[in-house]
Length: 257
Length: 272
Image (cartoon, helix red, strand yellow):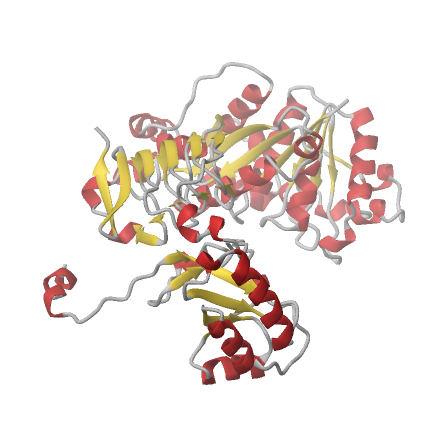
Protein backbone atom coordinates (compact mmCIF):
# COMPACT_ATOMS: atom_id res chain seq x y z
CA UNK A 1 0.00 0.00 0.00
CA UNK A 2 1.43 3.33 -1.05
CA UNK A 3 0.03 4.86 2.11
CA UNK A 4 2.51 2.94 4.19
CA UNK A 5 5.47 3.91 2.05
CA UNK A 6 4.70 7.58 2.44
CA UNK A 7 4.24 7.30 6.16
CA UNK A 8 7.71 8.66 6.98
CA UNK A 9 7.05 11.83 5.07
CA UNK A 10 3.61 12.48 6.52
CA UNK A 11 3.27 15.05 9.28
CA UNK A 12 0.13 13.41 10.64
CA UNK A 13 -2.55 10.87 9.99
CA UNK A 14 -6.25 11.21 10.74
CA UNK A 15 -7.65 8.45 12.90
CA UNK A 16 -11.16 7.77 14.09
CA UNK A 17 -11.21 7.12 17.80
CA UNK A 18 -13.63 6.78 20.67
CA UNK A 19 -12.44 8.25 23.93
CA UNK A 20 -14.20 8.11 27.24
CA UNK A 21 -15.54 11.55 27.90
CA UNK A 22 -17.16 13.37 30.75
CA UNK A 23 -20.39 15.02 29.77
CA UNK A 24 -21.67 17.88 31.87
CA UNK A 25 -25.39 17.87 31.42
CA UNK A 26 -26.62 21.36 32.18
CA UNK A 27 -30.03 21.69 33.75
CA UNK A 28 -29.55 25.36 34.49
CA UNK A 29 -28.07 28.07 32.32
CA UNK A 30 -27.28 30.27 35.31
CA UNK A 31 -23.48 30.56 35.64
CA UNK A 32 -23.83 31.38 39.35
CA UNK A 33 -25.72 28.20 40.14
CA UNK A 34 -23.15 26.20 38.14
CA UNK A 35 -20.37 27.91 40.08
CA UNK A 36 -21.95 27.02 43.43
CA UNK A 37 -22.37 23.38 42.53
CA UNK A 38 -18.87 23.09 41.09
CA UNK A 39 -17.36 24.64 44.20
CA UNK A 40 -19.12 22.00 46.29
CA UNK A 41 -17.91 19.16 44.06
CA UNK A 42 -14.38 20.52 44.00
CA UNK A 43 -14.10 20.37 47.78
CA UNK A 44 -15.49 16.78 47.79
CA UNK A 45 -13.26 15.31 45.12
CA UNK A 46 -10.40 17.58 44.14
CA UNK A 47 -8.71 14.77 42.16
CA UNK A 48 -11.40 14.84 39.53
CA UNK A 49 -10.77 18.44 38.59
CA UNK A 50 -7.41 18.12 36.86
CA UNK A 51 -8.13 20.07 33.69
CA UNK A 52 -10.56 17.29 32.85
CA UNK A 53 -11.97 17.78 29.35
CA UNK A 54 -15.74 18.03 29.42
CA UNK A 55 -18.50 18.28 26.87
CA UNK A 56 -21.25 20.69 27.84
CA UNK A 57 -24.57 19.12 27.02
CA UNK A 58 -27.16 21.87 26.70
CA UNK A 59 -29.96 19.77 25.22
CA UNK A 60 -32.07 20.05 28.36
CA UNK A 61 -31.97 23.85 28.34
CA UNK A 62 -34.77 25.89 26.86
CA UNK A 63 -32.97 29.21 26.40
CA UNK A 64 -31.89 29.96 22.84
CA UNK A 65 -29.18 32.33 24.09
CA UNK A 66 -27.02 31.22 26.92
CA UNK A 67 -23.99 32.83 28.44
CA UNK A 68 -21.67 30.19 27.08
CA UNK A 69 -18.56 32.29 27.58
CA UNK A 70 -19.33 32.82 31.29
CA UNK A 71 -20.18 29.16 31.80
CA UNK A 72 -16.87 28.19 30.23
CA UNK A 73 -15.04 30.64 32.42
CA UNK A 74 -16.68 29.16 35.51
CA UNK A 75 -15.64 25.67 34.39
CA UNK A 76 -12.06 26.69 33.74
CA UNK A 77 -11.87 28.42 37.10
CA UNK A 78 -12.70 25.00 38.60
CA UNK A 79 -10.15 23.17 36.47
CA UNK A 80 -12.61 21.71 34.01
CA UNK A 81 -11.74 22.16 30.35
CA UNK A 82 -14.77 22.57 28.10
CA UNK A 83 -13.87 21.15 24.70
CA UNK A 84 -17.20 21.01 23.00
CA UNK A 85 -20.92 21.70 23.27
CA UNK A 86 -23.60 19.20 22.49
CA UNK A 87 -27.06 20.19 21.29
CA UNK A 88 -28.78 23.53 21.48
CA UNK A 89 -30.16 25.78 18.73
CA UNK A 90 -28.14 27.50 16.03
CA UNK A 91 -27.06 30.57 18.10
CA UNK A 92 -25.53 28.18 20.65
CA UNK A 93 -23.66 26.38 17.90
CA UNK A 94 -22.37 29.69 16.52
CA UNK A 95 -21.18 30.94 19.89
CA UNK A 96 -19.51 27.57 20.60
CA UNK A 97 -17.56 27.90 17.39
CA UNK A 98 -16.74 31.52 18.18
CA UNK A 99 -15.25 30.36 21.48
CA UNK A 100 -13.15 27.75 19.73
CA UNK A 101 -15.27 24.85 20.98
CA UNK A 102 -16.55 21.96 18.95
CA UNK A 103 -20.24 21.34 18.50
CA UNK A 104 -21.99 17.96 18.46
CA UNK A 105 -25.52 17.32 17.27
CA UNK A 106 -28.04 16.46 19.99
CA UNK A 107 -28.03 12.98 21.40
CA UNK A 108 -31.47 12.09 20.00
CA UNK A 109 -30.12 12.25 16.48
CA UNK A 110 -27.19 9.97 17.09
CA UNK A 111 -28.52 7.66 19.78
CA UNK A 112 -30.46 5.15 17.63
CA UNK A 113 -27.43 4.48 15.47
CA UNK A 114 -24.52 4.53 17.83
CA UNK A 115 -22.33 2.69 15.37
CA UNK A 116 -22.54 5.05 12.49
CA UNK A 117 -19.96 7.27 14.08
CA UNK A 118 -17.48 4.46 13.86
CA UNK A 119 -18.54 3.14 10.51
CA UNK A 120 -18.57 6.40 8.67
CA UNK A 121 -15.88 7.89 10.84
CA UNK A 122 -15.13 11.32 9.59
CA UNK A 123 -11.38 11.70 9.61
CA UNK A 124 -11.37 13.48 12.91
CA UNK A 125 -11.33 12.56 16.52
CA UNK A 126 -14.47 10.85 17.67
CA UNK A 127 -15.55 10.86 21.24
CA UNK A 128 -17.84 8.42 22.94
CA UNK A 129 -20.29 10.69 24.64
CA UNK A 130 -22.81 8.25 25.96
CA UNK A 131 -20.80 7.27 28.98
CA UNK A 132 -22.60 8.43 32.08
CA UNK A 133 -19.71 9.69 34.14
CA UNK A 134 -20.75 11.06 37.46
CA UNK A 135 -18.56 13.87 38.63
CA UNK A 136 -16.83 11.69 41.17
CA UNK A 137 -13.20 10.65 40.85
CA UNK A 138 -13.94 6.96 41.45
CA UNK A 139 -15.58 6.67 38.04
CA UNK A 140 -12.80 8.44 36.28
CA UNK A 141 -12.62 7.25 32.68
CA UNK A 142 -9.50 5.17 33.23
CA UNK A 143 -11.34 3.02 35.74
CA UNK A 144 -13.88 1.82 33.21
CA UNK A 145 -11.97 -0.74 31.17
CA UNK A 146 -10.90 -2.71 34.20
CA UNK A 147 -14.39 -2.91 35.67
CA UNK A 148 -15.62 -6.41 36.38
CA UNK A 149 -17.59 -7.37 33.32
CA UNK A 150 -21.07 -8.75 33.03
CA UNK A 151 -21.06 -10.82 29.91
CA UNK A 152 -23.75 -12.13 27.63
CA UNK A 153 -24.12 -15.38 25.70
CA UNK A 154 -26.24 -15.39 22.56
CA UNK A 155 -27.14 -18.71 20.98
CA UNK A 156 -28.21 -18.80 17.35
CA UNK A 157 -27.62 -16.85 14.20
CA UNK A 158 -27.47 -13.07 14.49
CA UNK A 159 -29.30 -12.05 11.35
CA UNK A 160 -29.12 -9.07 9.03
CA UNK A 161 -30.60 -6.04 10.74
CA UNK A 162 -30.24 -7.46 14.23
CA UNK A 163 -28.01 -5.95 16.85
CA UNK A 164 -26.75 -7.87 19.86
CA UNK A 165 -25.04 -5.87 22.58
CA UNK A 166 -23.22 -6.66 25.78
CA UNK A 167 -23.02 -3.14 27.19
CA UNK A 168 -21.10 -4.12 30.29
CA UNK A 169 -18.91 -7.08 29.42
CA UNK A 170 -18.00 -9.76 26.93
CA UNK A 171 -20.31 -11.02 24.24
CA UNK A 172 -20.22 -14.66 23.22
CA UNK A 173 -22.15 -15.64 20.10
CA UNK A 174 -22.64 -19.37 19.68
CA UNK A 175 -23.56 -19.21 16.01
CA UNK A 176 -22.89 -17.01 13.04
CA UNK A 177 -23.14 -13.24 12.69
CA UNK A 178 -24.52 -12.59 9.23
CA UNK A 179 -23.88 -9.70 6.87
CA UNK A 180 -25.81 -6.63 7.97
CA UNK A 181 -25.87 -7.72 11.62
CA UNK A 182 -23.96 -6.00 14.41
CA UNK A 183 -22.47 -7.39 17.58
CA UNK A 184 -21.11 -5.02 20.21
CA UNK A 185 -19.49 -5.42 23.56
CA UNK A 186 -17.87 -3.29 26.19
CA UNK A 187 -15.36 -6.13 26.48
CA UNK A 188 -14.39 -8.88 24.06
CA UNK A 189 -16.50 -10.26 21.23
CA UNK A 190 -16.32 -14.02 20.64
CA UNK A 191 -18.07 -15.53 17.65
CA UNK A 192 -18.12 -19.32 17.49
CA UNK A 193 -19.20 -19.36 13.88
CA UNK A 194 -18.73 -17.26 10.79
CA UNK A 195 -18.44 -13.52 11.38
CA UNK A 196 -19.90 -11.83 8.31
CA UNK A 197 -21.38 -8.71 9.90
CA UNK A 198 -19.90 -5.98 12.06
CA UNK A 199 -18.14 -6.67 15.31
CA UNK A 200 -17.23 -3.93 17.74
CA UNK A 201 -15.32 -4.69 20.91
CA UNK A 202 -14.40 -2.22 23.63
CA UNK A 203 -17.23 0.13 22.73
CA UNK A 204 -16.58 2.21 25.86
CA UNK A 205 -12.94 2.58 25.02
CA UNK A 206 -11.33 -0.58 26.36
CA UNK A 207 -8.21 -0.80 24.22
CA UNK A 208 -7.39 -4.24 25.62
CA UNK A 209 -10.57 -5.78 24.25
CA UNK A 210 -10.41 -8.21 21.35
CA UNK A 211 -12.51 -9.94 18.74
CA UNK A 212 -12.25 -13.68 18.25
CA UNK A 213 -14.01 -15.62 15.55
CA UNK A 214 -14.08 -18.99 13.84
CA UNK A 215 -14.35 -17.71 10.30
CA UNK A 216 -13.54 -14.14 9.37
CA UNK A 217 -15.63 -12.41 6.71
CA UNK A 218 -16.46 -9.32 8.79
CA UNK A 219 -17.82 -6.17 7.18
CA UNK A 220 -16.21 -4.18 9.93
CA UNK A 221 -13.97 -4.90 12.88
CA UNK A 222 -13.50 -2.32 15.60
CA UNK A 223 -11.69 -2.28 18.90
CA UNK A 224 -12.17 0.84 21.02
CA UNK A 225 -13.04 2.84 17.94
CA UNK A 226 -10.09 1.72 15.83
CA UNK A 227 -11.63 -0.02 12.92
CA UNK A 228 -10.93 -1.94 9.73
CA UNK A 229 -13.39 -2.42 6.93
CA UNK A 230 -13.62 -5.64 4.97
CA UNK A 231 -11.68 -3.91 2.22
CA UNK A 232 -8.80 -3.17 4.61
CA UNK A 233 -8.50 -6.74 5.83
CA UNK A 234 -5.71 -8.86 4.41
CA UNK A 235 -7.52 -11.24 2.03
CA UNK A 236 -5.36 -14.11 3.24
CA UNK A 237 -7.04 -13.85 6.64
CA UNK A 238 -10.53 -14.18 5.23
CA UNK A 239 -12.27 -17.41 6.08
CA UNK A 240 -9.76 -18.26 8.80
CA UNK A 241 -9.95 -18.42 12.58
CA UNK A 242 -8.55 -15.20 13.96
CA UNK A 243 -8.03 -12.93 16.91
CA UNK A 244 -8.19 -9.18 16.52
CA UNK A 245 -6.49 -6.86 18.95
CA UNK A 246 -4.97 -3.43 19.21
CA UNK A 247 -1.21 -3.12 19.05
CA UNK A 248 0.25 0.39 19.13
CA UNK A 249 -3.06 1.85 18.10
CA UNK A 250 -3.23 -0.46 15.09
CA UNK A 251 -5.77 -3.19 14.67
CA UNK A 252 -3.90 -6.44 14.25
CA UNK A 253 -5.50 -9.59 12.89
CA UNK A 254 -3.69 -12.80 13.71
CA UNK A 255 -4.42 -16.47 13.24
CA UNK A 256 -5.85 -18.09 16.35
CA UNK A 257 -3.82 -21.26 16.44
CA UNK B 1 -57.37 -25.75 13.61
CA UNK B 2 -55.65 -24.85 10.37
CA UNK B 3 -51.93 -24.50 10.03
CA UNK B 4 -51.06 -20.95 8.97
CA UNK B 5 -48.07 -20.72 6.64
CA UNK B 6 -46.65 -17.43 5.42
CA UNK B 7 -44.72 -17.31 2.17
CA UNK B 8 -42.29 -14.44 2.49
CA UNK B 9 -38.87 -13.21 1.33
CA UNK B 10 -38.18 -9.55 1.99
CA UNK B 11 -37.00 -9.03 -1.56
CA UNK B 12 -39.49 -8.62 -4.38
CA UNK B 13 -39.63 -10.66 -7.54
CA UNK B 14 -38.12 -13.83 -6.12
CA UNK B 15 -41.22 -15.94 -6.63
CA UNK B 16 -43.36 -15.57 -3.51
CA UNK B 17 -46.70 -15.46 -5.27
CA UNK B 18 -45.74 -18.20 -7.72
CA UNK B 19 -44.64 -20.36 -4.81
CA UNK B 20 -47.71 -19.58 -2.68
CA UNK B 21 -49.98 -20.52 -5.59
CA UNK B 22 -47.99 -23.65 -6.44
CA UNK B 23 -47.79 -24.87 -2.86
CA UNK B 24 -51.45 -24.15 -2.12
CA UNK B 25 -52.40 -26.04 -5.28
CA UNK B 26 -50.10 -28.91 -4.34
CA UNK B 27 -51.63 -29.18 -0.87
CA UNK B 28 -55.15 -29.18 -2.32
CA UNK B 29 -54.14 -31.83 -4.85
CA UNK B 30 -53.02 -33.93 -1.89
CA UNK B 31 -56.52 -33.64 -0.46
CA UNK B 32 -55.87 -30.88 2.08
CA UNK B 33 -58.48 -28.19 2.41
CA UNK B 34 -56.47 -25.09 1.59
CA UNK B 35 -57.04 -21.36 1.26
CA UNK B 36 -54.46 -18.97 -0.13
CA UNK B 37 -54.68 -15.31 0.89
CA UNK B 38 -53.14 -12.43 -1.04
CA UNK B 39 -51.77 -9.91 1.48
CA UNK B 40 -50.30 -7.69 -1.21
CA UNK B 41 -53.02 -5.04 -0.95
CA UNK B 42 -52.64 -2.54 -3.76
CA UNK B 43 -50.53 -4.84 -5.93
CA UNK B 44 -52.84 -7.78 -6.39
CA UNK B 45 -51.21 -10.61 -8.36
CA UNK B 46 -52.26 -13.90 -6.85
CA UNK B 47 -55.60 -13.88 -8.71
CA UNK B 48 -53.71 -13.71 -12.02
CA UNK B 49 -51.36 -16.54 -11.12
CA UNK B 50 -54.31 -18.63 -9.96
CA UNK B 51 -56.28 -17.69 -13.07
CA UNK B 52 -59.31 -16.37 -11.21
CA UNK B 53 -58.96 -12.64 -11.93
CA UNK B 54 -62.30 -12.49 -13.71
CA UNK B 55 -64.18 -13.84 -10.76
CA UNK B 56 -63.06 -11.37 -8.11
CA UNK B 57 -65.98 -9.49 -6.56
CA UNK B 58 -65.04 -8.88 -2.95
CA UNK B 59 -61.60 -8.97 -1.39
CA UNK B 60 -59.72 -9.22 1.89
CA UNK B 61 -60.14 -5.51 2.65
CA UNK B 62 -63.90 -5.69 2.08
CA UNK B 63 -64.09 -8.55 4.56
CA UNK B 64 -61.94 -6.81 7.17
CA UNK B 65 -63.95 -3.62 6.89
CA UNK B 66 -67.22 -5.50 7.16
CA UNK B 67 -68.41 -4.71 3.65
CA UNK B 68 -68.67 -8.36 2.66
CA UNK B 69 -68.82 -11.74 4.32
CA UNK B 70 -65.91 -14.14 4.12
CA UNK B 71 -67.91 -16.61 2.02
CA UNK B 72 -68.72 -13.88 -0.50
CA UNK B 73 -65.06 -13.04 -0.93
CA UNK B 74 -63.65 -16.57 -1.12
CA UNK B 75 -63.18 -17.80 -4.67
CA UNK B 76 -63.37 -21.52 -5.29
CA UNK B 77 -60.62 -22.80 -7.59
CA UNK B 78 -61.97 -24.25 -10.83
CA UNK B 79 -59.32 -26.96 -11.18
CA UNK B 80 -58.96 -28.41 -7.72
CA UNK B 81 -61.57 -29.07 -5.08
CA UNK B 82 -60.52 -28.05 -1.59
CA UNK B 83 -58.75 -24.93 -2.85
CA UNK B 84 -59.96 -21.39 -2.24
CA UNK B 85 -58.47 -17.99 -2.94
CA UNK B 86 -58.97 -14.82 -0.93
CA UNK B 87 -57.82 -11.98 -3.18
CA UNK B 88 -56.32 -8.66 -2.14
CA UNK B 89 -57.81 -5.30 -2.95
CA UNK B 90 -56.20 -3.48 -5.85
CA UNK B 91 -57.63 -0.06 -5.06
CA UNK B 92 -56.65 0.27 -1.40
CA UNK B 93 -53.30 0.31 0.34
CA UNK B 94 -51.82 -1.72 3.13
CA UNK B 95 -53.13 0.62 5.82
CA UNK B 96 -56.58 -0.75 5.10
CA UNK B 97 -55.54 -3.95 6.89
CA UNK B 98 -55.89 -4.07 10.65
CA UNK B 99 -54.30 -6.57 12.95
CA UNK B 100 -57.62 -7.42 14.61
CA UNK B 101 -59.29 -7.75 11.22
CA UNK B 102 -56.61 -10.14 9.97
CA UNK B 103 -56.86 -12.17 13.17
CA UNK B 104 -60.63 -12.49 12.81
CA UNK B 105 -60.37 -13.62 9.17
CA UNK B 106 -57.68 -16.19 10.03
CA UNK B 107 -59.66 -17.47 13.04
CA UNK B 108 -62.77 -17.93 10.94
CA UNK B 109 -60.90 -19.63 8.09
CA UNK B 110 -59.06 -21.78 10.60
CA UNK B 111 -62.27 -23.60 11.51
CA UNK B 112 -62.89 -24.82 7.97
CA UNK B 113 -59.47 -25.32 6.43
CA UNK B 114 -56.41 -27.52 6.98
CA UNK B 115 -53.94 -25.01 5.59
CA UNK B 116 -53.98 -21.22 5.28
CA UNK B 117 -51.25 -19.94 2.96
CA UNK B 118 -50.50 -16.22 3.35
CA UNK B 119 -48.83 -14.68 0.32
CA UNK B 120 -46.78 -11.83 1.79
CA UNK B 121 -45.96 -8.61 -0.03
CA UNK B 122 -42.31 -7.74 -0.52
CA UNK B 123 -40.57 -5.52 2.00
CA UNK B 124 -40.51 -5.55 5.76
CA UNK B 125 -43.24 -3.00 6.41
CA UNK B 126 -46.76 -3.28 7.70
CA UNK B 127 -48.16 -5.50 4.94
CA UNK B 128 -45.37 -8.04 5.28
CA UNK B 129 -45.52 -7.94 9.07
CA UNK B 130 -49.27 -8.51 9.12
CA UNK B 131 -48.90 -11.43 6.72
CA UNK B 132 -46.40 -13.12 9.02
CA UNK B 133 -47.80 -12.09 12.41
CA UNK B 134 -50.14 -15.03 13.02
CA UNK B 135 -48.11 -17.66 11.15
CA UNK B 136 -47.24 -21.09 12.55
CA UNK B 137 -44.74 -21.80 9.83
CA UNK B 138 -42.86 -19.67 7.33
CA UNK B 139 -41.57 -20.48 3.89
CA UNK B 140 -38.74 -18.10 3.09
CA UNK B 141 -38.33 -17.83 -0.68
CA UNK B 142 -34.76 -17.09 -1.73
CA UNK B 143 -33.01 -16.75 -5.09
CA UNK B 144 -29.39 -17.82 -5.40
CA UNK B 145 -28.03 -14.30 -5.26
CA UNK B 146 -26.48 -12.30 -2.43
CA UNK B 147 -29.10 -9.57 -2.14
CA UNK B 148 -31.91 -12.07 -1.91
CA UNK B 149 -30.05 -14.09 0.71
CA UNK B 150 -29.42 -11.01 2.81
CA UNK B 151 -33.07 -9.93 2.64
CA UNK B 152 -34.17 -13.43 3.60
CA UNK B 153 -31.82 -13.26 6.55
CA UNK B 154 -33.49 -10.01 7.58
CA UNK B 155 -36.94 -11.57 7.31
CA UNK B 156 -35.81 -14.51 9.45
CA UNK B 157 -34.82 -12.00 12.10
CA UNK B 158 -38.30 -10.47 11.99
CA UNK B 159 -39.96 -13.89 12.10
CA UNK B 160 -38.09 -14.52 15.32
CA UNK B 161 -39.20 -11.24 16.90
CA UNK B 162 -42.20 -9.60 15.26
CA UNK B 163 -44.74 -12.41 15.28
CA UNK B 164 -47.42 -13.50 17.72
CA UNK B 165 -45.51 -16.64 18.58
CA UNK B 166 -42.40 -14.62 19.32
CA UNK B 167 -44.27 -12.01 21.35
CA UNK B 168 -46.12 -14.59 23.42
CA UNK B 169 -43.01 -16.70 23.89
CA UNK B 170 -44.73 -19.74 22.31
CA UNK B 171 -42.77 -22.30 20.28
CA UNK B 172 -40.89 -20.48 17.56
CA UNK B 173 -42.26 -20.35 14.03
CA UNK B 174 -40.99 -23.27 11.95
CA UNK B 175 -38.84 -21.75 9.25
CA UNK B 176 -38.38 -23.42 5.88
CA UNK B 177 -36.05 -22.40 3.09
CA UNK B 178 -37.35 -22.55 -0.47
CA UNK B 179 -34.78 -21.77 -3.11
CA UNK B 180 -36.26 -20.71 -6.43
CA UNK B 181 -34.80 -19.93 -9.84
CA UNK B 182 -31.89 -22.24 -9.21
CA UNK B 183 -29.85 -22.79 -12.32
CA UNK B 184 -27.26 -25.53 -11.73
CA UNK B 185 -25.22 -24.67 -14.81
CA UNK B 186 -24.88 -21.03 -13.75
CA UNK B 187 -24.08 -22.14 -10.22
CA UNK B 188 -21.38 -24.30 -11.74
CA UNK B 189 -19.99 -21.30 -13.59
CA UNK B 190 -20.01 -19.28 -10.38
CA UNK B 191 -22.68 -16.82 -11.58
CA UNK B 192 -25.02 -17.90 -8.82
CA UNK B 193 -24.61 -18.79 -5.18
CA UNK B 194 -24.62 -22.49 -4.63
CA UNK B 195 -27.05 -24.38 -2.47
CA UNK B 196 -24.60 -25.07 0.34
CA UNK B 197 -23.56 -21.42 0.65
CA UNK B 198 -27.19 -20.34 0.98
CA UNK B 199 -27.94 -23.02 3.56
CA UNK B 200 -24.78 -22.12 5.44
CA UNK B 201 -25.71 -18.45 5.70
CA UNK B 202 -29.41 -18.82 6.45
CA UNK B 203 -29.01 -21.87 8.70
CA UNK B 204 -32.57 -23.19 8.34
CA UNK B 205 -34.04 -26.41 6.94
CA UNK B 206 -34.28 -26.69 3.19
CA UNK B 207 -37.87 -27.36 2.17
CA UNK B 208 -37.38 -27.34 -1.54
CA UNK B 209 -35.38 -26.25 -4.52
CA UNK B 210 -37.14 -25.06 -7.67
CA UNK B 211 -35.00 -24.95 -10.79
CA UNK B 212 -35.12 -21.96 -13.09
CA UNK B 213 -37.63 -23.07 -15.65
CA UNK B 214 -39.59 -21.85 -18.63
CA UNK B 215 -42.53 -23.73 -17.22
CA UNK B 216 -42.87 -21.16 -14.41
CA UNK B 217 -43.23 -18.17 -16.71
CA UNK B 218 -45.60 -20.06 -18.96
CA UNK B 219 -47.68 -21.13 -15.97
CA UNK B 220 -48.02 -17.66 -14.51
CA UNK B 221 -48.98 -16.11 -17.82
CA UNK B 222 -51.60 -18.79 -18.37
CA UNK B 223 -52.90 -18.47 -14.83
CA UNK B 224 -52.33 -22.14 -14.09
CA UNK B 225 -50.15 -22.84 -11.05
CA UNK B 226 -47.07 -24.73 -12.20
CA UNK B 227 -47.86 -27.66 -9.91
CA UNK B 228 -50.45 -28.74 -12.50
CA UNK B 229 -47.67 -29.09 -15.08
CA UNK B 230 -46.39 -32.37 -13.71
CA UNK B 231 -44.21 -32.98 -16.75
CA UNK B 232 -42.12 -29.93 -15.94
CA UNK B 233 -39.13 -29.89 -13.65
CA UNK B 234 -40.53 -26.93 -11.68
CA UNK B 235 -43.91 -28.66 -11.30
CA UNK B 236 -42.23 -31.77 -9.95
CA UNK B 237 -40.00 -29.72 -7.67
CA UNK B 238 -43.05 -28.01 -6.16
CA UNK B 239 -44.74 -31.39 -5.70
CA UNK B 240 -41.62 -32.55 -3.82
CA UNK B 241 -41.75 -29.38 -1.74
CA UNK B 242 -45.37 -30.00 -0.78
CA UNK B 243 -44.57 -33.60 0.13
CA UNK B 244 -41.80 -32.39 2.46
CA UNK B 245 -44.17 -29.83 3.96
CA UNK B 246 -46.45 -32.75 4.80
CA UNK B 247 -43.57 -34.46 6.57
CA UNK B 248 -42.45 -36.89 3.88
CA UNK B 249 -38.81 -37.63 3.13
CA UNK B 250 -38.13 -36.81 -0.49
CA UNK B 251 -34.65 -36.72 -1.99
CA UNK B 252 -33.51 -33.42 -3.48
CA UNK B 253 -33.62 -33.15 -7.28
CA UNK B 254 -32.64 -30.64 -9.95
CA UNK B 255 -29.70 -29.22 -8.01
CA UNK B 256 -26.81 -30.81 -9.86
CA UNK B 257 -25.39 -29.82 -13.18
CA UNK B 258 -24.99 -33.42 -14.46
CA UNK B 259 -28.56 -34.28 -13.72
CA UNK B 260 -29.62 -31.16 -15.48
CA UNK B 261 -28.13 -32.20 -18.79
CA UNK B 262 -29.81 -35.58 -18.52
CA UNK B 263 -33.14 -33.94 -17.82
CA UNK B 264 -32.81 -31.43 -20.58
CA UNK B 265 -32.37 -34.30 -22.98
CA UNK B 266 -35.52 -35.90 -21.58
CA UNK B 267 -37.50 -32.69 -21.89
CA UNK B 268 -36.12 -31.81 -25.28
CA UNK B 269 -33.64 -29.28 -23.97
CA UNK B 270 -36.27 -26.72 -23.01
CA UNK B 271 -34.45 -25.78 -19.82
CA UNK B 272 -31.56 -23.44 -20.01
